Amino acid sequence: MRFLTSGESHGQRLVAMLDGIPAGVPIDVAAIDRDLRRRQLGFGRGARQKIERDQVRIVGGVRHGRTTGGPVALEVDNRDAPNWERVMSVEPVADPPAPVTRLRPGHADLAGALKFGHADVRDVIERSSARETAARVAAGAIAKAVLALVGTRVQSEVAVIGDVESTPTWDDEKVEASEVRCSDPGKSAAMIAAITAARDAGDTLGGIVAVRATGVVPGLGSYAEWDRRLDGRIAQALCSIQAAKGMEFGDAFAAARERGSAVHDPIVLREGRFARTRNRAGGLEGGVTNGNDIVCRIAFKPISTLMKPLASVDLASGEAAPAHVERSDVCVIPAAGVVAEAMLALVLAEALLEKFGTDDAETLVASVERYRARLRPLGTRPGAGGGDLTEMP
Image (cartoon, rainbow, N blue to C red):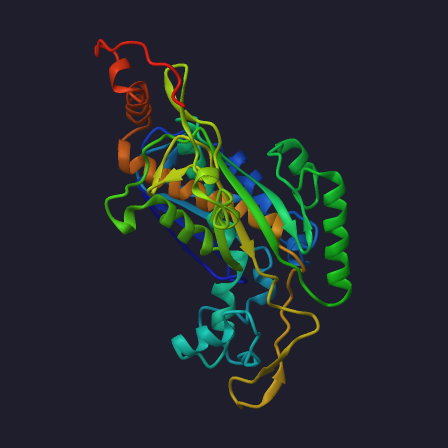
């Protein structure tokens, strides 16, 4: 399975294309739109979200509510595009807008302009913008539908905004009722206050998002080659999200300061199946899923565009100049969790289909059921004639 996105922040629309989705996967357009709406919400979002009403349009690969086995093509219109028609015109215009040349520290402006040789940073801004994540969320909703076939579910919760920290409870009702997608009402209020203070100061705030996958099939990924290790693939996907600067599985950074006897997850038998007494590894060992929940935390830096711009340099003249100010958010951490769900779902769906095949949903489900039936000690598998096994220490 693979996917690509295309489109600019203020262009006509965003596009996502997924290849390798099995035939027969039920697709609920309303569920995709709900994820798109969740991505738009959150205290600290900017004026753009009052303009956009993101909805998906499926233009290929789905018929009568089910995937066909062909590539799935998705579109999300930019309602703000008519206001940018001259700026973003595909065809040359008689009176082109003035180029953007004042560089924003922390953004892709300078690095992108140097890489591609752009004289107008607008060419960087439009594609590097986090508006692109709307296409990722739409694609991720298709991946979630694939995972749902085998009982895997992905969810997220805000753990930190600024200096306010909360412990995720994974209570979806409480999370979605919060303006900052935090299940603790007191911490939610403190996060909102921190965002308000940053906004009043013309500044921005970052934070940490927790994302979890439950019902994960053990044995996805591989330890045999570096690029097949699933933890590496998940880390790449999550750190590819705009403004993401780091991530951990389980409580990796705390565990790095402890002894192995306190960190590793003891193996036991429960009802004849392998289990763990805890999950500090975050659901992966040796680059392979071990049957526990996959739990990650992703750190996001504050948004780069500041209403009180930092000192910078003009790309054209080389002279000192304040950074460009582009309409932006104060805090995107609540929305970042929804994007992290999509990226985790896309990687897990790809790994699932690698192991069990991509032709059709019915065969996929049957293959997973047969596989899960043998995930027990060798002597206790059907026909093995093994004796009783008690819980391991």
